[in-house]
Image (cartoon, rainbow, N blue to C red):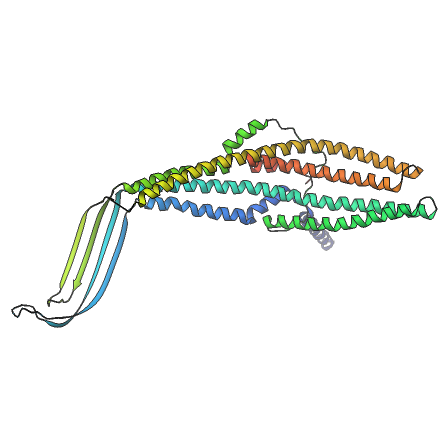
Length: 449
């Protein structure tokens, strides 16, 4: 009895584990699931992260410019001389002599005043600020790319499903036309029309399958894995009208768009570069200390030496003339600043244009969803009435096929309008520079999990 009970418990546990694994395998992937995969596998974001980490080292490099620099040097040598003295009364012995020696020393240099180094430290901070903004821009871009690719796959899958449904409807109409022809109610024209529609929809199905595979591979390039099943959009989705005007969105975009901020940092860096070039006219002052030990066991005059020397002092260097290079660098830096300012103006115009485009597209998507919902309802009524008319002989097979095609087109356009509405929300906020993962989570709530 106990063995049977243990066996039953074991079977129940195994069944629960199998059911849990099966549910995990077939549970649709939501937009947030795909985004989490993208965070871990997207190569573009990984590249931006590495670039940002590398840029952080510029701060340490800039600070090192005002820290002591210590160098150690050493050497050994062997010498051979052959000397003769013309003065016979010279106390030094001539002839061939060989001797060896060595030397080593330590030098420490501490910058006290170097204007160029101070400017380079400020430039390093500006470059790090740009790198941080570039990383943030890459994160925002990933949110948009993930959303766009997710709904591209859904749209491609919906197209296949609608084509399959349309193919089934055409096939049914073909069979009905054949039955009517067999009893002499309809002509061969109805059969040919239905067959032509069926052959065409089969060709369209191949194209749709190909588009779906391409969309899946595009998503795989972001996440690293092919999606198995994506959560669809709720059928009761109701778009919300925009509360803020286009002018307010433009004001938000000009203030928050990260690309504009990056170009503004470039202007700051250019101003610092002008200051750095002008510093080439200024003197530098360093504190210098060194110690050296030089030893030889002989010399050309017959004796060696062991010299130990230590010095400490200040070193002033005043640039007087450098061939006009410093003035040329100043002129170049001024022109680069003008270019950076022009780039800011260009980035602002592009941001405004992109914001306006996203705003108008979102408004259009909202109107399209409502219009296509009505179109689907009207097309459904038309299919029903046309089918009844065909049964009583006042409508032709072509009329039925046209009505069915119009219904499927309306359904496809409705789904695409819903996807466009959700994607355009992210696109507008991305253009304005305010998109976050919270916006992605809000859209995720509109999916059937």
